[in-house]
Image (tube, rainbow, N blue to C red; front, top):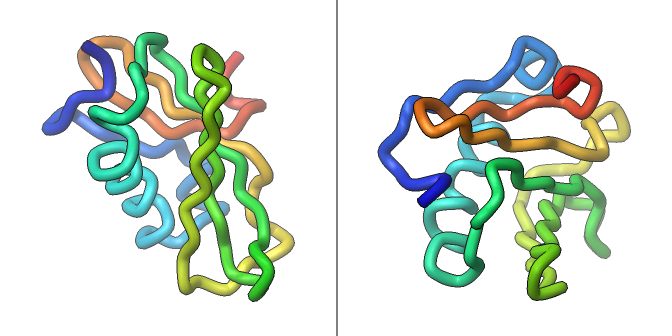
Length: 105
């Protein structure tokens, strides 16, 4: 099964340069606490959209392609326009890495 914790977890240089550490850590918490056991997580790539909610706080949005279900996780962090719009989380079976779309090639 993919995306099980604990695992070797990393963020690419581009992600580290674009997001504060606590927002990177929040992705791992979302996977462990909100997605595991709720969604099948069968593939080796998860896609998160980052957007502003109604209060202009950062919101992570995950859509399961198989079930077409969507989960939005609100945060108390102010949304910043320079945040990436999309993040990929890749699991190669040995490690999990958060990447920007342009780093995934």
